[in-house]
Image 1 (spheres, rainbow, N blue to C red):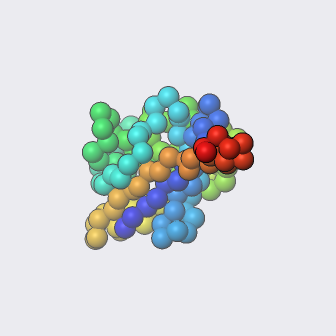
Image 2 (image 1 turned 60 degrees about the vertical axis):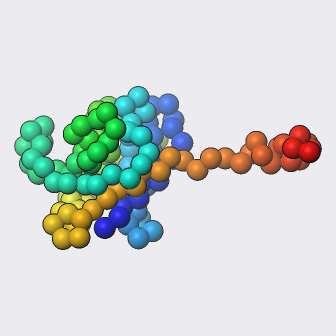
Length: 141
């Protein structure tokens, strides 16, 4: 199973995003900019998290990082590089995170145990505003 995390633009305090499976919305996400992982494709495994005292999804092979989990948490300060998931969002926060995590974990657990599971983390699409302005003013001629 391939999961896609499409990041939005950073607010300075958080990086909002949307988690999708087969182009269908699954959850809203939140990351802390100062410790966010790089964009890329990472396998997901299940491991026993001493912090949560339970099995959790963890991203493998993240450059220069370890124990990057997908878990619940309402605010960017609840993350030390991990990806937070929630059902609803507002500026710099997500809500109903434990409920959303439970639903997501069920899907991830089944995928990891059968066909495997990966997450593709995508940075925000680049704006073409500069290209449009340059074309309008003839700077590209």
